[in-house]
Length: 76
Image (cartoon, rainbow, N blue to C red; front, side, top):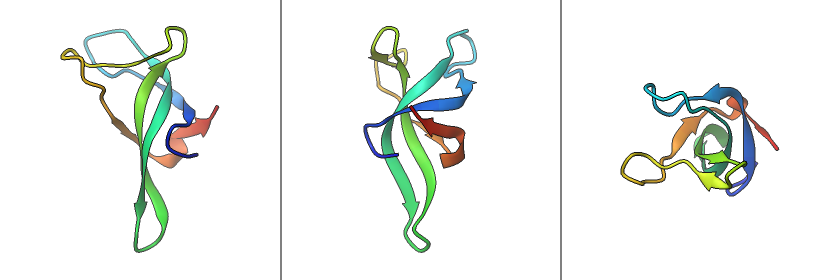
C-alpha cells in the first residue's frame, strides 16, 4: 500500500452521522510510520466514490482526510 493507491475499507464508513452516505473505498493520502520502530501506525485516506469518480468533500467543499489503522484497509 502506497500513497495514491485505491483501497477498500473493510467496514463501511459513514463520514457524517446525520447522512446515510457510506463509503467502501478510499485513496491513500499518507502513511504514518513510527520512526523509532519503523511500524505503520496509521493510514490517512480520502474517501472515494468509484461510481461517480469523486473524492468526498465536506459541507464547505474541503477534501477531508480520515485516519484508519493498517488492518482496517485492504488493497483493491
